[in-house]
Image 1 (cartoon, rainbow, N blue to C red):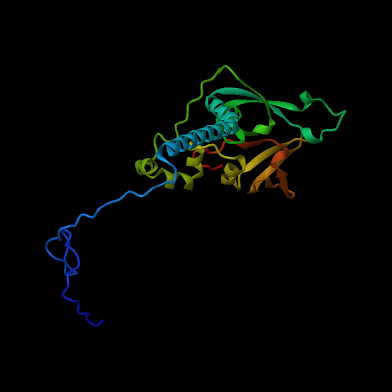
Image 2 (spheres, rainbow, N blue to C red):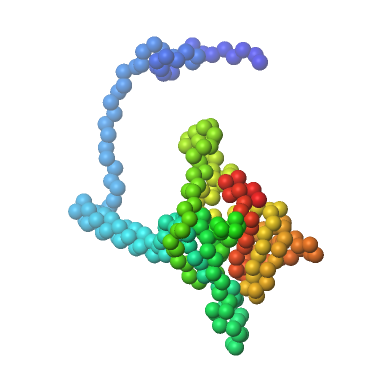
Length: 265
């Protein structure tokens, strides 16, 4: 590039500690103080403007209060449910599951009690729309909220060891979780499961290629390998064919105890 000759004219003072590459003078010129005049913010007289501002502030506070109350009413029921379920983690419970499709059950069919089924186990996880129990048969039972008819905390005859999955993790991972929580946790379904309640469909995607059993509302049981999960259904490969199952028709899902920590079956 051709060299550009700069004019020998100074425009401003030189900032301290910087290299002079613009012909800056050594000292700043004396600043001339300019008169300052406030500009009017309203055409109303000061007293009337003060009253208007007070009314606006009061109205804003009222709107904010109403908005917060409405938001609290919308999430209160869900928050209370999740908080109560969190207290059950590690406890033995008995869950009564409703294995019927209420919306289409015709009159004259068997009563509700004939369609109910009870499952006992250790409460190990609750998501946004389901819970997971660990049974004495070394199985996990995944139960949607919509199929839970009743749940009772039982006295524990056998004490299960409490899992602390982050107790012995790699020190570098612990540091990353501490200082880069937002970047690290969303990349791992396992970490997401520990810190946040997840949807059933989301967590099941981590168990593709796992063997499972699905009990449906019509008292049928499907055994096979999970090959696909969508927001509305599962696709299970059985020895004869691939079969889709809508989540609305699922009473519960059973799997041999997977490695929940590593999300492996």
